[in-house]
Image 1 (tube, rainbow, N blue to C red):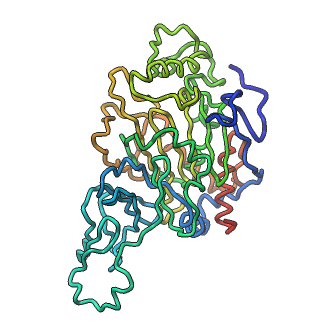
Image 2 (cartoon, rainbow, N blue to C red):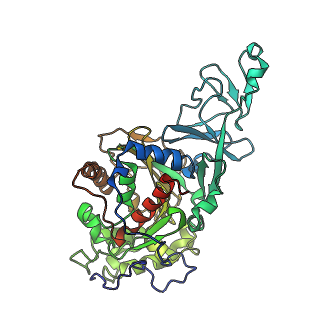
Image 3 (cartoon, rainbow, N blue to C red):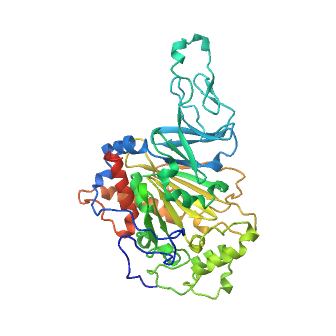
Length: 457
């Protein structure tokens, strides 16, 4: 397949040209943008990072984690954002609440384990106790405290917490609007995937030598695939991908799978990569009569045919959603690769003190299918032998700075590349990024970052 010549500035390509505005794969006009060249200091300047923290991170909704990680009363997990630590817990009433992970007595962090299940929280410094709703229920030697001291407050400090699409969001700003309003059309789009019915099968936190935006930039476009990930060219359409932008810095791209890139020399042979995708959809590659150009259209047909047998509901999805990848960008630092069978959550977390380091927080979730003929999609990159039943929530794999994260070939290639990008950004010879329309998502979310940093929001 040759590259198209009808690229439309302000809209780009459409993976489903006949899609109606109500369809999930409709190609929306891009949000208003500029062609300015941002100063590269945004990627390393401590002062810029401090403004991001004071004016953006502390005032917006950020993704803490999935609801399925705390399914029973007393279940909790810790969410780390910069220098802050939050306890996300399911209360006795079954609600989800969030608290700053700090004892009001002397400031000790109450919860130490990343995941747990408790009847109450106990501070390890002086044994103050707190119920699951944050209320103080016991003060050691309370008779030795002046009542006027305790009047200042003895409960855990609550932080705003709301749930959308099976995902838990927190916001340190009490005056912020609802998270659904913040997410806009992204909220409804994610609801369709029923993430609350999925469970975490792998969770990796690796530390990378780059700014969090350097990390997000690399995953918000496909322009680099041919150079950095040539292995993807046989089965992923990187050029005619669809990019959509939405208010509040939100965005997405649609990546056609089971279709060779126009840069790939063989456009006809059903190569091993496409064969694997056919197999995962329930198609025997040996009996498939089409070419590589026919595989993408065959996959939705096969998936719908076997849907009832394996207990997956595909009726609410378009054909593109069954064949392609739909990575949604949640401003400012999240991308969720969305498929009916599972989601791939990436969070580009700022380092508490160093703007040239970020934490790549990677969560793989699947909807378990108890059928021997069903295979978890290979794009998830799960290690051999991974338990996908959801019986046990796996521990977080922590990968320190300088150690290869072992996330699969493609992600490991990114981890090796980004330190060099970060170093190059530091050069006097680099005057700032020159973004193409294939990188419109980068321009879009950076403009939103600037609005916060400049005090416009």
